[in-house]
Image (cartoon, rainbow, N blue to C red; front, side, top):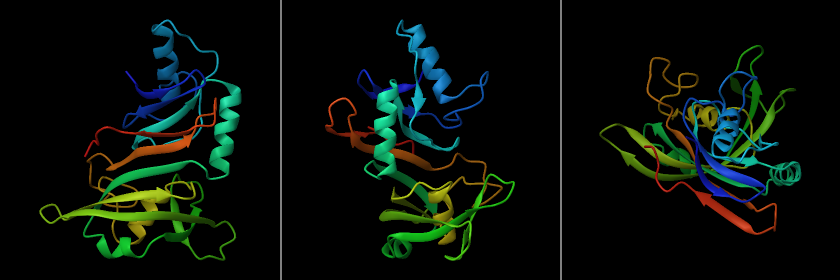
Length: 214
């Protein structure tokens, strides 16, 4: 069952599990399809349901789901204007204290042709897009040689947090694309908090996970 952490008649905030895509073609499981079925089984079928933003399949955490077209439009506008604040927690390789001091992280990112991955490129690259993330160092564990850091993306580029962390020598634990390809552990990246305005009344709203998976 998909955990619902906040709701009104026009939208909900849910906790997406690891391994479940936010959207997918008809006939395959996704966060959207599972929620539709969940609402129907509870006796509250919905005629409209769409994710306003996405999380990568291996990333867990908070996702805003609109249940009305007007709410989807208003929330999408908040994302476009960068009025929605997102906070992620990541576990990365090594001691990331110095890397976090050099914040915000600013890079230019470009998608690799015919691949579902990106790379850091020069600022004048024709297909490059600016990426910016505010970061904070939380703690270092010498036993595992890993750090917990807080990531607050300003932009929303593909794999932004994953490539920016790896580019600074601290790939996210469990990331086969930008870290150790032989590491089969779950990706240690979670969308922990969302701050937005309720599309029904304009009130500032904060939703956060009560506990983290790592």
